[in-house]
Amino acid sequence: MENTESLEDIEAEIRKCKKCELWKTKTNYVPGEGNPRATLVFIGEAPGKEEDRQGRPFVGNAGKLLTEMIEKIGLRREDVFIGNVLKCRPPNNRDPLPEEVEACSMYLIRQLDAIKPSIIACLGRYSASFLFNYFNIEFRGIGRERGRVKEVERWGKKVKLVALYHPAAVLYRPQLRENLEKDFRMISGLLAQKNHTLFDFME
Ligand code: URA
Ligand code: SF4
Image (cartoon, rainbow, N blue to C red; front, side, top):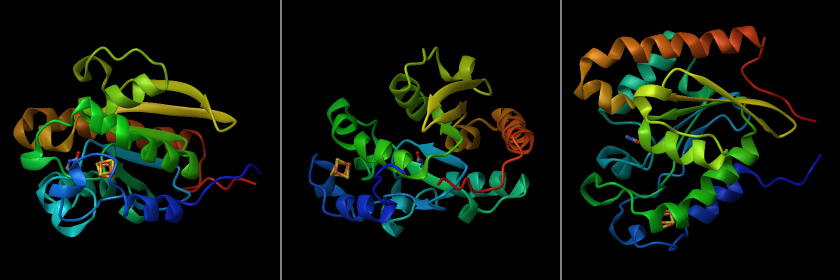
């Protein structure tokens, strides 16, 4: 079909990147990981301390909760793709700066173009506002958008975009956990409804 670059090519480029200042303070780049043909992808904000240390996404406390939620709907981390808007940790986990997002976000878009997922789950306000904006969908705040499925046309198919609370926010406010679990069950329903295999094979 069309000429698409592989996830490995993009990852190799990320590992040499100096497009914003964050490469100087990071320990490891965190390109993201998972199945290159994943139907379902989870996109967070940026690596935290443990992710920076290991070079892998969502491996700290928030990551443990995300992994638990993924497993609760009968999937494994290896079945999905897990990534972030930024590939280097902002010092002390400060919010990403607009110029950092500007410099880094094309990697995420290229990763999505390589994977061509059918469901994009945005973890938290930050990732959701970036991706909603990218797909030209109005974002009215995480509290209002979470759990609502938006449909966009992409890669010659209908792609579902859904915002979820960030697992770190749920750790901080345990009363949000029920919502997160409900949204995961909803995603599980979407997978079943579309009769997806776990991986979408494209010609
Ligand atoms: N929070 C994120 O947004 N991403 C990670 O990879 C870890 C924590
Ligand atoms: Fe490059 Fe992104 Fe790291 Fe900035 S955060 S140096 S743009 S990989």
